[in-house]
Length: 86
Image (tube, rainbow, N blue to C red; front, side, top):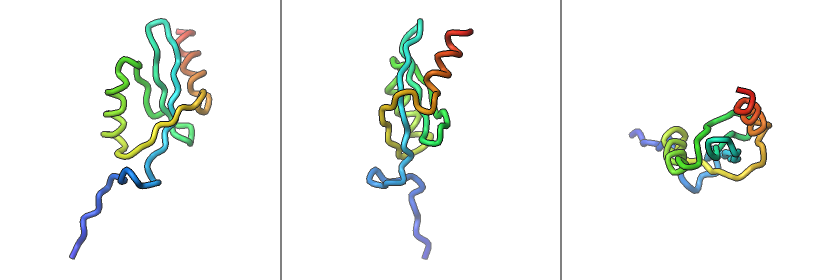
């Protein structure tokens, strides 16, 4: 007999994707930057859409944790340079 396994981690599962979140001020509002521990940019959103960000991350990755981080892997500074040099 086959058993069905849930492909999404449970809320108590330590294998949940751990994400780092920082914020950066821009001329048109505050932006949220989300990265993983390997330095991959996972998402950017404006803070006025932060509730939507959580829903999109849940839809995309299933279980995850978000922890505040200062300039994760240099992505906040890189995003700022892109915004200010454009």
